[in-house]
Image (tube, protein in one colour):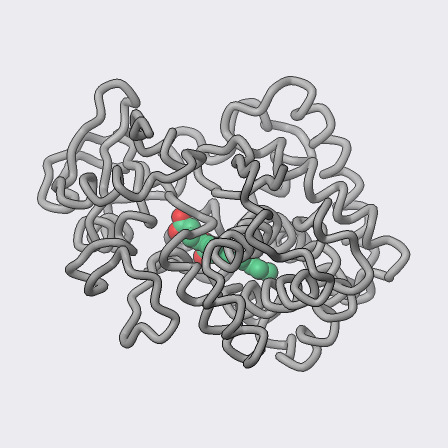
Length: 358
Ligand code: HEM
């Protein structure tokens, strides 16, 4: 099999991991064709994500030009994920506070309920929207709308979105704003709170679908794993943790250099962009011994998939709860067998690895 041509092509490649094993050995370097610095090792990824020179958005473009003065741009501009420094800190506290009001029992209940009621084989991404929406107080009869709007909003804010995706996303963003502004839980809350509630839906959408899908791939490929989970369902939690490291749904993220200076030991210029390859850091032998071995009992696992530092994911636990319910339901439905991966492809994306089963 041909290796992927670069770390963007790797995201949707059938098996990017031999390529990543080479890439992780390379210190931070510039890919002239992509016009990006590439940070791949655990040390370089940690240094970039911890650098005070690095921002989540290009310095002159806090909101993508295509989204300016639109409902989607309004949400985007408030998102904790898309802001740094002084603006980021209170947003992060507010988002973390919202998530901390959700008990594990509530999350498990909603996840099991919607895993049972949805057609997960066809629409795995709808699960997180239903669960997160329900937990945020969206009425049950609006959750299906919310899932569709979340999909359209996510497609619209993706880099390089086509004109029709932008159009659909604007209408979806306006509908989400309308609904969320009217929720009892949002009464008296400002636009940042409303936007970040919607942001929880969009952050969860593709990544959780990828975690469910990549876990199905692991189970389909390893009969011993299927047997272990069948006899001890609680092991699924450990399987999800190892899949998150081994075949992560989010493979990379980006940072933008705000001022001339040194990042990960490398002189850089203001405006430079860095591809931070989380998937290679997970496979760095310096972070995880024998990194190509799939081991659900791995001691001291280091996983970069949920980010690290100021922007680390506050939804990791919730994501695992939702994915666990989804996978458990698919196993119960008899949907997980060796043949599942016969016609495996991946949804087009520059950063998220989401399997599509033939
Ligand atoms: C398997 C599922 C998920 C994965 C792999 C994932 C991964 C990530 C990563 C890598 C980041 C940091 C991005 C960066 O630093 O550039 C992030 C941020 C974030 N995630 Fe998740 N995520 C998942 C699910 C969720 C869920 C379920 C929620 C909430 C319901 C959520 C909410 C957020 C938020 C709000 C941020 C922004 C945090 C900030 O910028 O301070 N994520 N996620």
